[in-house]
Image 1: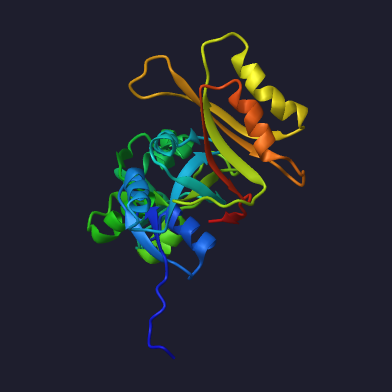
Image 2 (image 1 turned 60 degrees about the vertical axis):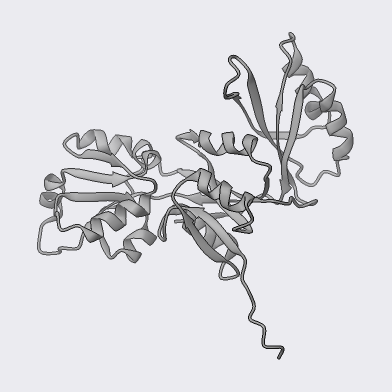
Length: 287
């Protein structure tokens, strides 16, 4: 033995232990990396860009609440790449401090405040509308709400978070699976300073000139190559009124496509083009 200790790469993620980003980190990296919790999505990007962390885990979009716009803005701003992805089937639960001596329905009627991430409130809006007396207080992630309730002595406090958070912070699941739809998925991106050269999925962004038919002409090469577009969305450019960038994901499947040739065709019709990454389509896990 040479006496050197093996250093595991550090991975930044949004929130604290028990957050859905932490769960995504665990599923993608396992025990091969060291988690590094961050308060905001921007902090995750900063940690990777500065070299503090090798990789980062950021939420990209939810199947019901839509894209996490802050993440996409940072993908434009930072010189980082998407190097992977992971999908989670999200189950939200109403969590409270453990007390099995009180009837559940009575306990629910006493809940006065709920702590969670704004996305969780959006994804559980139907349940919350049925209980209008429950005030909502937004925090930076779902697990932080669970931690707050765990450390509080107020029996009227609750949190919306997942099973992992309930386990870590020793909370009781008062009402399980309160999400609006049972098909509630969140896609997480893995960011890094260097992209891979292989993978069956590519993400990119581009901007267009204000010319009639420019978007159609840009997308035509994909149609001719029979490429499946899995996402296309426009976002306004910060500090540039009425300027937009388009975010696009496409699935290569089993096709053997000359990527350079495709990109050359795209460049003829766009003002700006940035390849966000080529990576393997992610696996899906249930929380």
